[in-house]
Image 1 (cartoon, rainbow, N blue to C red):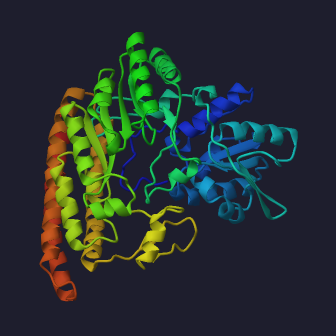
Image 2 (cartoon, helix red, strand yellow; image 1 turned 45 degrees about the horizontal axis):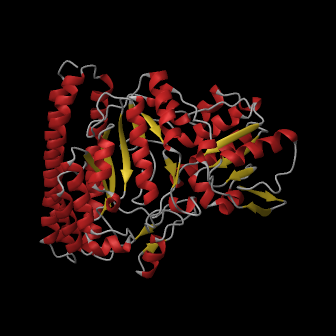
Image 3 (tube, helix red, strand yellow; image 1 turned 60 degrees about the vertical axis):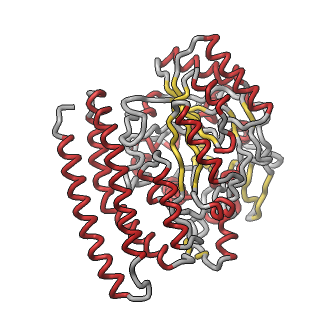
Amino acid sequence: MKDKYFKKELGNKEFLGIQYLAAMLDSKGFDCDIVNAHYMQWDENAISRNVDVNSYKFIGISCVSQRCYPFTKKLVKFLRERGCTAHICLGGFYPSLAYEKILYDIEGIDSLILGEGEESIVSLVEKVFNGESMDQLSGIAYLNQGLLSLNPPNRIMNLDKLPFPVRNIEYLGNISSIGTDKVGKRFFRMLAGRGCYGKCSFCSIIRFYAPKYKIYRSPQNVVGEIEQLVNKYGINDFLFNDEIFYEISKKGQMWIQQFVELIKQKEIKISFAIEMRANDIRHEEISLLKSVGLKRVSLGVESGIQRVLDEMNKGCTIQQNRDAIDILKQSGITPLISFIAIIPTMSFKELKDNYKFLFSLNCFIEENVYNKLNIYSNCEYKNILEKWNLLIEGSSFYERHGYNFYDPKVELFSSIIEDVRVVFSVHKKKLVAIDSKADNSEILNEFQGEWIKFNEQLWMNIINVLIEAIDNIDINNIEEIELMKKIYFKFINAQSDFLHNYIDSFNKLKM
């Protein structure tokens, strides 16, 4: 997939789902290769040139998200047209949610793995290698003489029985990333468990896990993997990809205590980042985790409007979000928030209040400023927008749904900000170039601190000027709107030129 806004140019390209599956197959005696096309930046032609697909009896393709599906479909067609006779299986979040439509849409697919695939893939590969029927295999969907055959998946209750995921240090890439606290460091992705008890209406991933609650690996199992990676690779930084690292329950609190005790007993020096819900943040647990290396917590704040939080079914309040951020800051932990600035059901007043809240937090990042609601398959927000008569059905089942806006001023704001984002995306590429050639972390860190402050102020100005401009126009007067846009984009072009010169001045320094 093309990285339009250069968001992942240098990012960690580990895919734990595939790496867990490969480890499971290896543990059962199957020779298993991983082709990380995302890391290699290979399209279907490059895959065909570099991989002898006809030497395999089984090919598994990960389709993590809805946005990946068009490429996945194209790849399967490409392989079949070039004589590939292997059993082709898809897996991932999206195939687990749209299995029936996918099976009827892609000619050449033999099966789909639904849900957690470690147990299912071993049984499936055994059947394929032995030429046996897939009947009765749990977590598998396929077409039998044109009719859907489905055996629902079961959750893996004991995650400790899974082997540690296969690792390839090359996938870690150059992780220095302007605008975050990860400067000049590489890290491993980790899972402490799977699942989330949340019911957010914008999330479709929660339907992947049924029943949808958190299942933990044991602290011993997690710390054992951390210790192994530190000793083998000498890398001490970890990003936990759990939807929630822990929840405030007796089980969650006990897990944290044991995890911290084990890290201290083994005297492992690490730093790590986690994801949490605001309503689970307390001083006690954060203090414990900080004592063994917690540096950053990602919080799903999402909105500064209580009506919108309720519509999102977040199960928390604006004050809980503020309190969580305050606790993290007081504890010396960096908060990193996810935030959906633009929601189609918003009034323009709510939009203004939403930005006031965001800027008051003093911990936003650029992506928070222009992030707008995405409507994916199987998320509850689709039904919400239908009730508001705002939903625009996608032209195909794998496209994200579009929508109209309740307030025409919010719609105008959204369209202009998207254009502004395109103007500034060229500067992202320059920042990537600075990152990729940097060999002086002190200079890079100095620029890092300056850049965060500069970029925050830049985007606050961009947003506030636009809000004021739209606030003062007659939304029904087309000529007035066009004049406003003309004046505003003169301002944007001036800001872009200023940013261009700012980045170039640093780019000329000896890195």
